[in-house]
Length: 241
Ligand code: IPE
Ligand code: IPE
Ligand code: MG
Image (cartoon, rainbow, N blue to C red; front, side, top):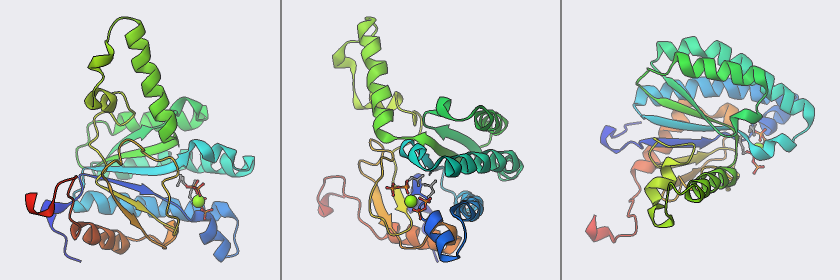
């Protein structure tokens, strides 16, 4: 599939959904789907950096996912720390920088340790910045931003008139990351599930029935080709563009 290098999204975000259903189809426990899903993550990160997209954000664990059965949450956390341990070398090889967004303090200490280590080791890499959304909720992110700004006002460091969209952006977890251009969700669900609420204001949305463990570099290219055929008007008329 031919992609126009000039028209790639700067920021691609993906809601990686469907691991559980994929495992069920195989008659296997849900965690089996998460393990296969982790392999897909590796392939997709590699493809995104080869294509030349500078920012990739992956929804890996939501605030709401804490409500899943304890055993599944534990298995996911275990998988995550194993993944991080193993993945740093591959990220280094591919010049990929790892970042994380979400309520990272709520993660188990072991996961946090691997996460910070991987982030530190890859901090000078310059191809794609991959942000893992972990214990992430869009509403929670907006809440912590509001509380931080309110506190600065209370301390007399800021007046309400100084609160601009740019300042709000700077106070989110995604501080220095541009807005989302393309949001992909796998597994056929057509909802946002509390992901990047501020950042997707003008994103193009792409939904596919493919379950995340089956999502391939070809499917990614298909989504990008579809994106390149859209007209992003940002409120203007076609003639104004
Ligand atoms: C996405 O797959 C992974 C996480 C939310 C952690 P699911 O586990 O939600 O899979 P389905 O939606 O049940 O198939
Ligand atoms: C969204 O998937 C969160 C992640 C992919 C990490 P869910 O499977 O948790 O979403 P809902 O609950 O079906 O909306
Ligand atoms: Mg799901």
